[in-house]
Image (cartoon, rainbow, N blue to C red):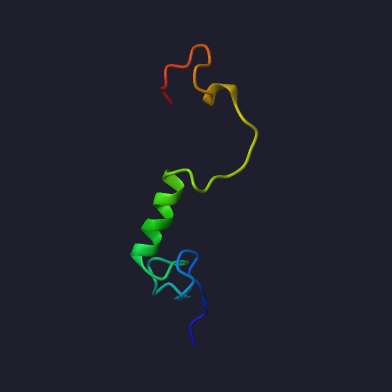
Length: 64
């Protein structure tokens, strides 16, 4: 019996085995929704703010 967990996006059951290429998500759609939320900065990893990332800081040309 495969292990199941709730999909982080839609909360439906999702297989955690290697037979699910989108794990821990239930589908490619849910995986892409989550990725879009990261790109839209709805999700983020908290950490100290860096002056180099602030807009308008001296010497910041926007290059990474």
